[in-house]
Image (tube, rainbow over all chains, first blue to last red):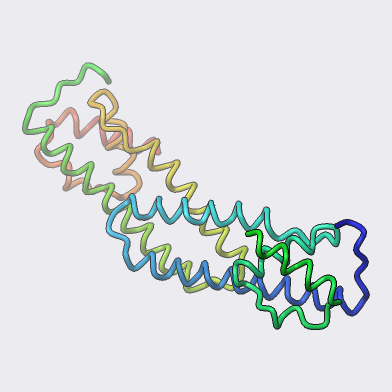
Length: 107
Length: 107
């Protein structure tokens, strides 16, 4: 998918929804963290939180790759994970939206 | 210090104050966690918490070594770090208390 071209307007939209998805996911992690902390009973619960954060960090570092050659796949994953909605894709070309949706169905 | 012998009564005290120190430290980490979470502004703050937990975990895994051959040093470190007080050592032999205090001064 490296040959897809992005217009300046599409790049703007892509950046905006990419950042929005990231912030939504970070907010979700923060909320999970607040809940998990309320349930801490012993050291093991704290190390479970440590493991949870490490796993999410690895996943996020891998996922949020803002290269135009990767963007269709990245946005597809974010759509499948509900960090983006169909509505967020408005303004992208029809073929890009279709490709992003196709990717999202694979996840 | 491997040749120090521990009476059954001393072993009981050692186990109790060792566990008490661990629980105090875990409680401290939990409280720090609660404060840190209130200050989360972005993803970086969450990964900082992840790093904080990883560092404390490594430190704790290394420190809480309940072998009688290590116990004088371990209790000395816990005393120097204020997870134990002089009062907690009551009931141990005078020479053990002295050794533990000497170790604590080195940290």
